[in-house]
Image (cartoon, rainbow, N blue to C red; front, side, top):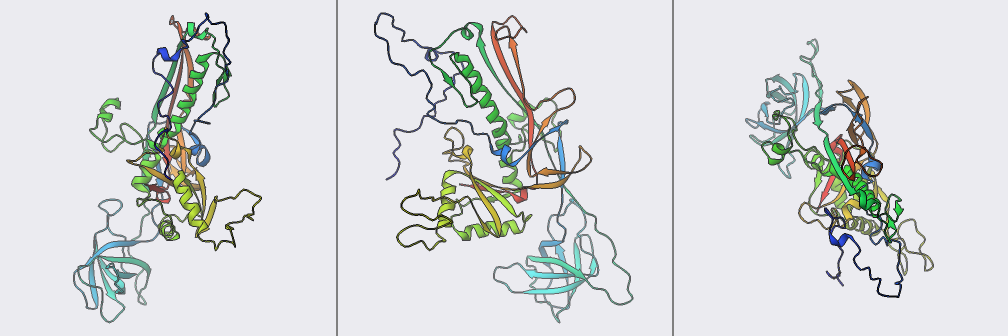
Amino acid sequence: MPILANPGFDLQPSSERVALPSNYITNFDFLNQYLPDTYEKEFERYGNRTVASFLRMVGAEMPSNSDMIKWAEQGRLHTKYTQVTVAAAGGTAGVFTVNDPLNPVGSNIAVRVGQTVFISDNTAGSALSNKAVVTAVTANTFTASYYEIIGVVPAATNLTVMIYGSEFAKGTPGMVDSLEANDVFFDNKPIIIKDTYEVSGSDMAQIGWVEISTENGGSGYLWYLKSEHETRLRFEDYLETAMIEAVPAAPGSGAEAALSTSAPAAGTINAGSEGVFFVVGNRGNVWGGGNPTTLAGFDTVIQRLDKQGSIEENVLFVDRQFSFDIDDMLAAQNSYGAGGTSYGLFDNDEDMALNLGFTGFRRGYDFYKSDWKYLNDASMRGDIVGGGISGLLVPAGSTSVYDQILGKNAKRPFLHVRYRASEAEDRRYKTWITGSAGGARTSDLDAMQVNFLSERACCTLGANNFFLFQD
């Protein structure tokens, strides 16, 4: 039967922005001679409430001392154009026009006289193709003579052209022109993340009867300790979730006007940052048809990965439903045992717990599955409908890039965080206390203020190797 809507799960924040009567115990009754039986220890009904762990598992943190982080990624080694037209069909040669976007913009096509090309018709179901040798080249066109008696590719049709080699007649000069390697350049900017907690000196001196309990091991009977610890835990979670969810502010947007401290520079990120979901959604691969629940669906994913970096090992960070879908898909590949389930490496019998889950599988590449609490937590992305995400495929290992700040090639994890730091200032994770309570002696304010600050950006290298699964 379906799960009933009520009673449901509580999403009302347990933290309050201001002091309210509900923050304090008001049922003191000293006219009653009977002592109630109380449980002093808080009951942790939501278990571990923190969601940060993703970036610690797959990435690293390293310092940066600039407002802009730039890096270069390799382009393709071989040349292939997929938006090519030919003026006329048939004949012994054809004049081909390349309509693919060129990198850099305005450059000439990377086709040279003497190279041999494979020409294919892009029409679905077509078997028409030719092979030819290039005899003349202009800025965006080339003339090629067919090896066949007559060209069979149709006129004015979208064609694919792939260079596979070269051939020259005896006694002729060498190759004319050379090819210059082009990198693809990306950049990102750090954002400043802040939080604060304040408690009056009087409240710091008030004892409670409830013993607090927090995920970072805090305990005691002073209630302000709980609020301070939870502020710290919440800030640490935001250090990760901000790197995952951050988006750059669109030019002319309200966020740009509110957050830019100077006149916006054309072509740069003036506010916001490029988080993991934004980068993969724009430069990576996106599965948008619900979860792939069959091997055929994963075969489509694998075929796309073949066209990208072909990283051998990948980790799938998924929500609960996607995890179940993968388990069911893998279980369906087994013939089952007589009278019960026997898939996987488990010798299941009536005296043991039945393991119905898988941690990974291999099909072309190695895929490891991990539940991502951030996608399951009801107070975060759990049960999100609009813009829902069910999983993220992250390549394992590191890649070599040219770091323009360091001025040399460097090994970097595909996903890593850069925080602002120098010899004089480290903004990875700053915390300080102000006021006149709690040991602070910085002002005449009868309170303790705990301040938190970090300035950081997430760099997603080789986004073409990532996969984002949208609901």
